[in-house]
Length: 251
Image 1: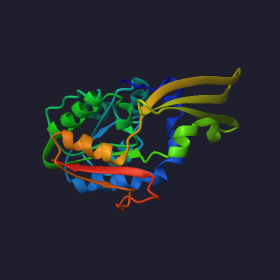
Image 2: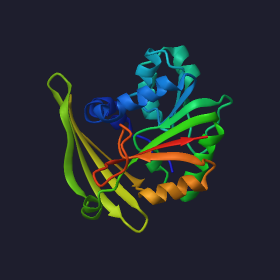
Image 3: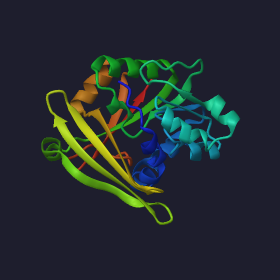
């Protein structure tokens, strides 16, 4: 299942997520990348929210994504040689590198775009194959909020701000649950001011949500045998207040 960002959603991605997400997970992933002391692969590299800073800090990092529009934004930030050598457009399920990595990360819900069980297992095994001995794989999903799953969201504004002086952009999200298939049908509505008036664009896609023991069974069906699931990016155990499943697997 390929969920590629439309061009205008990629255009505003940095503005939105540097504000609403960086304080949650960026320090965690950058620290893990530094600790890897060797080559790192970021699956779902996107516009380079982690990648650019990691590269600037001297980390030997590589990135892949299935969304050309997101990678095009990243291309504009990198030297031509760095882009050519380090970035690929590939799918998590069947990507292929000759080299092996000390650390592979799939941050910010990447695995939730894999809808089918067979895809999920194939992706985990493909990651396992690309790790060096004792290499680490880290991914995250959110802990399902059952009230929100059942009720969904209707026209919730999750971002509003200036993207250029005097020009505003707003993103509105609606969700509809498909409980039988464990999917959230998400609709993002984007509005922004531009020459000629108000512009608008919609993007609809499904995301697969997971429960704790389902994640454990999924990992245990894969080639991974060692793993730990924490409830946040500080490594605290899962409890009733946990909002994140932060999964660390070891080869």
